[in-house]
Amino acid sequence: MTDDNAPPDIDWSQYFVLPPQEVTLPDIDPKGGWILDVGGGGEGIIGLLKGQEVVAIDMRKDELEETTNDALKVVMDARELKFIDESFTVATVYFTFMYMPEDDFEAIFKEIWRVLKPGGELFIWDAIFEVPPEEREKKRFVVILKTLFPDGSENQTGYGGIVRDPQPDMFLRPAQKVGFKILDQKVDDFQFYVRLGKP
Image (cartoon, rainbow, N blue to C red):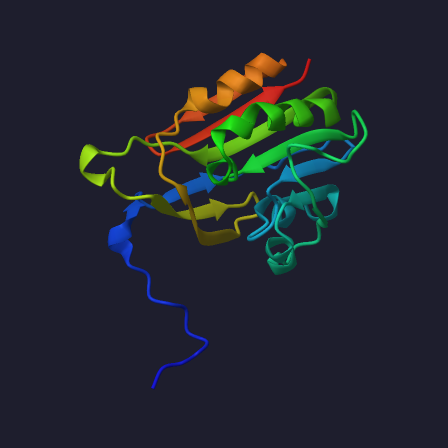
C-alpha cells in the first residue's frame, strides 16, 4: 500500500545535479521605495528578507499562493509589467532566469528598466555552469540552495531548470544593451551575482 500524499519518486539519473550552493544575502535597502521581486513565488526569498517592502510577481498563481512571506503578491508576466514608469527603487531576480527562455531576457530587462526610478538598482542571482559532454542528454538540472539571511536565519530548497550553458554574459549582454551599468558582480563555479544600476 502506498501513501497517496507522498511525492512521486524522482529519477535523479535524468537530472544534471549541481553541487549544493550557498548564498549570503545583503540587507537590500529600498531607499524609502518598493522592491520589485521578479519570480517571487515559491520560497519567496526576497519577501522573506524584506517583507512588506516587496511586491512579488510571478506568472504562476499557485507559486504565489505557496509563499508564506508578507510581500504583496501579484500574478504578472515580467515581459509586460503592469506598473507605471519609475515605480520602484530596487528590483530583484533571485534564481528565476533559469526558468525563463533566453530569448525573453531583453524584454524583461527593458521592462525592469522602465519601472525602476533613476538611480535604481537591480540585483540578480542565478546558476551558471557548463554541462559536461557525458551529461548532454539530460534535459533538466537541479541545485540544492541554502540562503543565509543577514539576521542569521537560513532557508534551504531545491531549484532547477532547463539544461543549457548559462554564463554571466547571458545576463549581462541584454542588461547592458538596455542601459544598465554594472555596479558589482561575483562569479563562482556554479552561481552568479550582479548588482546593476540605472543611471
